[in-house]
Image (cartoon, rainbow, N blue to C red; front, side, top):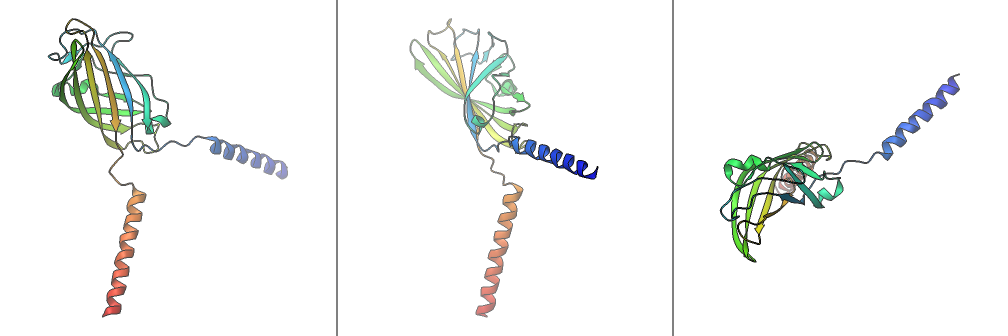
Amino acid sequence: MSLSRGIAGAVAALVVTTGAALATPLPMYSSGSFAVTAFTSTKTDVTTTTSFVLTSPTPNDVFIGSPSGSFAMISLPSTLGATTPLTFTTAGASSFDFTDAGLGTFTATSVTFGGKTPSGKGESVTYSVVGTFTLGSDWKNAGAVLSANETWSLTQTGGPGTSISMSATFASPASTVPEPATLTLLGAGLAGIGGFRLRRKKKSA
């Protein structure tokens, strides 16, 4: 009886151990970027308009893809919800906020006009949206708050009255805040240097 229980326990332990070994560890976020695309029905002059209504195929959605860096290690959602109209003013910074449980949360704090350039018969304008990115559950360092930005490009090739294409790049660099393990190693290193200097001082005395 005890032998059977022992065998059963060993099998159960093996199953648990195997399951744990097969579990994919979460990646640690360091830095990365992905592309953003949005569609708008607004056709007024792109150089003077700051508010754009998002449209088909799904209202309020911006589409993401082309992940690089850390973002290439997880499965990105195909779309992110956005506030419409998309407003490129400081007061409308919240228009660019997004939340995805796995990916994370971006909170915009400011929008800056980047200028305009000729583009065929029309013009293009750029905007920089700055904010913070809080890592979601897909990351080992979930909850970390990093700096982040969106660089938007709006192009109206045919001039006022024609469609405006909208695209952006979302990027968040590596955290500049040392992790606890890093701080421990740094402290140990500093303590070692201090002890070495003290020993040298005693010998020279």
